[in-house]
Length: 188
Image (cartoon, rainbow, N blue to C red; front, top):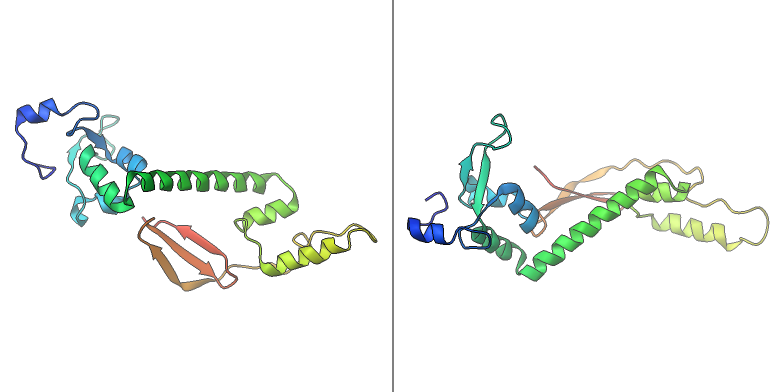
């Protein structure tokens, strides 16, 4: 009854194993495998029904929530459109995670230009690109040009606009600076 289904005991036992119709999965697995968020899973907000059990790792932790796999799959396919779209979104997020890790690595070690680009998320302003183009244009004559990004330019502090954009497909919010820099984040 916790899942909103009425199934006899024999049918439930017959379809309970791995990959079967009534297999249960944890909340964290539902979020990881099917890219669902708390809002979509929370029963109080119109999400899926679940069974709460004491946490097997430690009774002081919050209750473990178990969901029916087929209900989680249906919700995920309704959210993402199809299993292919879900897979594409997983790959996109994985690529994004790798890019963030690479930017963090460049921030710690790398040329000064790479460090500046890593700080601003790989986005440099149009004016900075033009300055860099002018600095490298006369590369044959005189002393070597200092990269424009490394020169002492006034430091910019991002002043984010009040309007924030919400993308339902990814459940992410975006805030933008007047300079064009954007940050995506998830509200908890």
